Length: 131
Ligand code: TYD
Image (cartoon, rainbow, N blue to C red):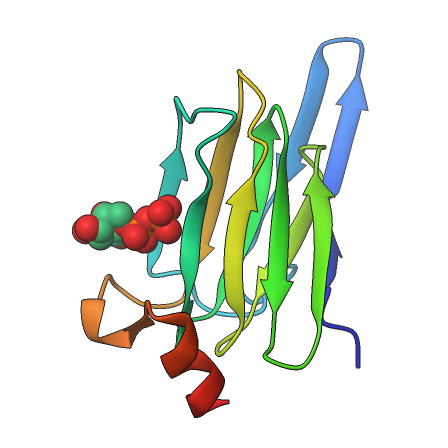
């Protein structure tokens, strides 16, 4: 099974602009408990570098782009999040890193749980041991 799980979000576009829809338990495969977004990132300062034990997330660049690296301990794949209707699932026990942010990047993330630091695995060797 592929590590990359794209979600093509429903997008309604016309001359007034593009409207993109995310609906819990419809195109988003969980009940959303938390939404956060990243802004003002620096091109050469990557972020992420962790996995979650249980948390399910969906990420989409609503503006600009970045490169998301996913790693399940056996394979690594990267994908450009470069369109507001192109989302990716970040499943539990998948190490992820975000690189090469464009200047205007806004990275929106939907999460299945409230913030819980104890759900993070922040050390790569711990992650490899656990998977
Ligand atoms: P972190 O998830 O490590 O950021 P990134 O993976 O983008 O580099 O979060 C950065 C800091 O913010 C960290 O101290 C945890 C805190 N944080 C919260 O308090 N609540 C949240 O919902 C998130 C995502 C992070």
